[in-house]
Length: 254
Image (cartoon, rainbow, N blue to C red; front, side, top):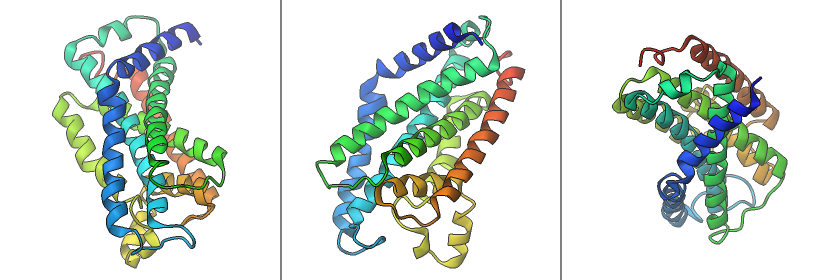
């Protein structure tokens, strides 16, 4: 394992989003707060999902996790597609990187960006409403697993896509619908039986539900079920992603 090479690529990927923090960190934080202000104001006092938890309190962990995973996906997918389109991917393929080292470097940077944006959302939301913390360790585990999983999915999308609009389509027709149908704004127990059953096949639901459990100690599913689903999704995507990287899928001829 070439840790120096892995760290160098990781550092390069982190600096890539840090240098444009207005776009990569502040903008998604502001977007999440706008969701909070609008939905919190309209639905506060009208909806009670968990006993003793206001709707605004319920909404904050969902928005926080949504922002974390969407930015983790954006980090890896945008980095790879930019490198392919600009032709700079050759500078990453030429050094003696193994597929696993490349994977860990890209995913590490995606997790860092997801956590940075999530911390920003939580810090500003704290001034809007008090959110209890039931178990910080569970919150951190699900935040890391969620950003890891979406970072891996972003790598797959970045390798598959050949143009920027294909990444945009991947995000518009897969990531955003799965996120909005995962229980960010509601509990799936409030859905009709058919939609509630379909939601159990949505891996994003387990990210949101397990993450929310860390705040309230309450969730739609047992937290161990959510954790198992997350670990399974992360393992499957890791195998697929490392396999594609080792074959240079749509990278070596880019």
